[in-house]
Amino acid sequence: MRAPRTLMSLDEVDLGDHICQVLDHTDDVLDRSRAFVADGALHGDKVVIVGPVQQAESEFPRVVLDPARLEGSLLAAVRREAAAADRQGFRSLRVLHHVTPRCCAEQTEELLRSELDLEEFAADTGALVVCAYHGADWDPSALQQIGCVHPHWLGSRPISPAFRVFRAGKESWAVDGIVDSDGATAFGAVLCALLAQTATVRLLCHALEFFDASGMSALADAVRFLPDRKVVLEGVNDTVRLSWELSGFAIPDIPVVMTP
Amino acid sequence: MTPSVPTSATAGAGYRHELYPYTGRDEFVEGTVRFIRDALDGGEAVVVAVPEDKASLLRAEIREDGAVRYVDTSRVAHHPGRLIAAWREWLQEHASEGRPVRGIGEAPWDTVRSQAEAQELRYHEWLLNKAFAEGPAWWLLCPYDLAQDKAALAEMARCHPEMRENGRTVRCESYDPQAPYAFTPLTDPCDPYDEFAYTRGELSAVREKIAACAQQHGLTGRRLRELHLAATEVAGNSIRHGGGHGVLRTWSEDRWLVCEFRDSGYIEDPLAGRRRPDPTQSGGRGLWLVHQLCDLVEIRSTPHEGTAIRLHTALPE
Image 1 (cartoon, each protein chain N blue to C red):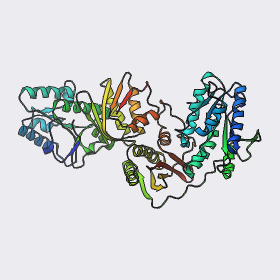
Image 2: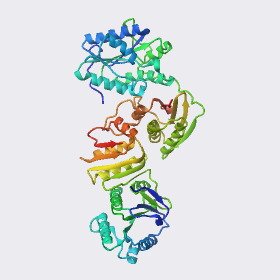
Image 3: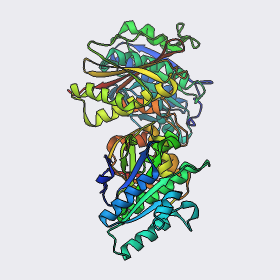
Image 4: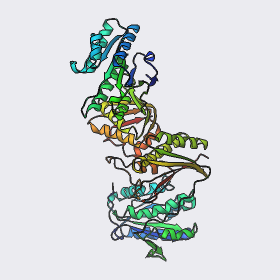
């Protein structure tokens, strides 16, 4: 299973990594893109840069995808590129996603969904995906939430969320770290995003260090939010299972299964 | 959720809470058996929640049947914060056939594990009046063995509206339903103790401080995880409702690890955490879990002095 880690530089990336990189205001998008293209060439990877990067588009016209001009979803586009890379004999696909804020209330929710799609894509295909966020452009709480769905981080001030949810195989996700009142809202948002896509979410909790009552409430609310959904938590310790029952959540109306 | 328990036929309106001071086993049996027989004569059911040695005395006189039920108190007897919810469940289960219900409840006074536990057991007796003030109506008799601690009878009388004297029910003059509970002041922390001021974003640090103290005293594994969960709820309440910060003190005292949290918040409802949460309610589970996971919880809260909560966890032998 992929292990979450913090990277010091892009030299340490590996296939299947899904990296959250927070850029300083001094970081130049074009410089980053050039280095990324060069690394791709060095390793025999096909490179795709996603973002409204006009200068990059003129410099690397064949590798830039502008989200505003995509036909279909970003996920569909990178899947097409990955299939093409495979046919064309590249080692893998390497995606640099320059994520820019949009002005709408659903932004974080949509972005969370998109990042979970990219996480699943990276884990399932072995593609390397770097999501670059200019820290100054983003609300810190939104960045923390987005950071929770990246197993890998990079940057001079990398995001270090209290917990991480990441793909752990074809049919399952894993959560590690700490889910307490500081992260319960983000945890609930991630679960809602996952449950919106699939009827049963299997979540491996063997590396979940701590899960408190607010996290459990977030779990209960998320699974109640949509009909006919179920969450299966595996590797849950006896304290969490006891607290779940004591909290009154162990009822059929809240379809959550917890196993050791 | 308030259970639907029929009004006791002999209780009149509302909840009756009667202290029964006695001396020795014979007097215990005499008074409680009479109470049960009166209930049965009136078509009422009885829940008996007393220590096992006392229950066996009563079983010899009145066997368990559809009308008389002896409940196992071992999971809750030494945890005063769990007793009100336990009584609600016992009453609800026993009232299923629609009969009015009486209860007999005696704390395990002769095996209390600390002065703090004895104090909290007496506070529980006082809280029962608040817990059942709005219903359901039932009649609880609380035997109290004067051989244990005669001096504490006055404190017990302040917690009961009525008292049984010479076979008659009389009013407890010292019980004042409007007065706040007269707590004994918390003892000073034992030396040496550790102190840590916490604020937003420092719940992990709170847990680390507790783990360091707990591990010094051999408290690990499941019990430490339960304490961590309870401590996180209390410290989280300080941050959300108690002025955004608090102070943690940890120390060991006899066979106990004590974690004390102080903040400037005020817990207005003395029953907070003593009612089983409804699955649909939003939040409000923190103090409930704290009472369920800790061996003993002391809560002192006033608008002027803020809140102090002590979590006691038994240390391994």
